Amino acid sequence: MPTSTTTETPPQEEGASLSHGLKQRHLSMIALGGVIGAGLFVGSGAGIAAAGPSIVLAYTASGLLVMLVMRMLGEMSAAYPSSGSFSAHAERAIGPWAGFAAGWSFWVLLCTAVGLEGIGAAHIVSGWLPGTPEWLWVALFMVVFCGTNLAAVKNFGEFEFWFAALKVGAISLFLILGALAIAGVLPGTDAPGTSHLTDFLPHGGNGLIIGLLASVFAYGGLETVTIAAAESENPVKGVASAVRTAMWRIALFYIGSMAVVVTLVPWDSKDVVENGPYIATLDHLGIPGAGQLMKVVVLVALLSAMNANIYGSSRIAYSLVERGQGPKVLAKLSGGVPRTAVLTSCFFGFVCVLLSYWRPADVFPWLLNMIGAVILVVWIFIAVSQLLLRRRIEREAPQKLVVRMWAFPWLTWVALAGMVAIFVLMAREQDTRVQLYSTGGMTLFLAAVGYAWQRARAKR
Image (cartoon, rainbow, N blue to C red; front, side, top):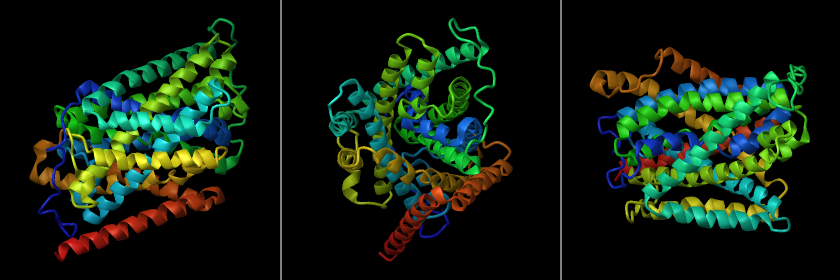
């Protein structure tokens, strides 16, 4: 393993020992399904409450940024397919310490997201069955999806395909109904015009920043498809196709959904936060049974994303250990599945069971704030890695550039500048400064541990 940023000995390619049970249709839906979860269906309500109609601007800005990031990641992942994805690319481009910091940061993010999805799903079920404790449902979901991920990967892929298809279909129908209502042609509704859009920035810049952070977190999860590609039948073709199709679809779903919600429903409606923007909008339109049906879709979306995040966290942990950056026990395979890594990644979800028992009222926003900036750190590693690797690929193996970053290197620098700008905005606002410091502290700690690990291995 290299001990500096030189790459005469590139990191080991992953996936040789993992099974290859995922098909192209699985990858395409994992790309869509993994990101459509708590951040969009539940967390976006808090973003709308903070940013008002300007949430559309927040989702547009972060959507453009994530499209650039996914294009960069797609370029590297098509050239070097690996279950370590951006972590392996960071190691190859920058050094083992960078791969360590990026990989374990993302692992923390996904493990925390598992808890968020579980808490969001439990809130819906406990609403249907009053008197049942939310923590009990979180525990049940964790047991079920921990079991799902301990099984063969093809079962996981099939599960995600059908449930992601349901989510995508439901959001598409929501957009169609919303467009008809905005145009005033949906029976029983009048065109709202711009009556709900006049107070565009109700809480000023601070509200917009909170909305921007909520939108950034909501987009997190797209990276899972490049992790899953290592277990597909054709990793290079699979990741290239999935990345190309997923980016614009996600942007359409997110930006379009937010535009429909804030146009049809007052941004300060309590229902937007309490029930979620999708259910609040359908209830506002008075479509019989639509709100309850959407609750079922939201529940499926949360459980599906929960399942995908357990998968992604276990595979990133497996890859890190395979590259000598974690306890060897996590790399143990059984039936082509890293089951010890799955169990370890599920552990924090069970911790969330305790948190939802002790602090049921505020555990969800607390967890959401805790990891809001981690995805930006991961994206910075992706951008820097792509800057360094692109020239190297052009020089050493140009045939591997199946996917190319647009307008390289200018748009890569634009993306980096956007990430830095978000960090600066966070540092200026009191509400987000603590979040920035906690994320920065964790990143520095992991980078230091990774560097110490790198030095220790070099001396052996």
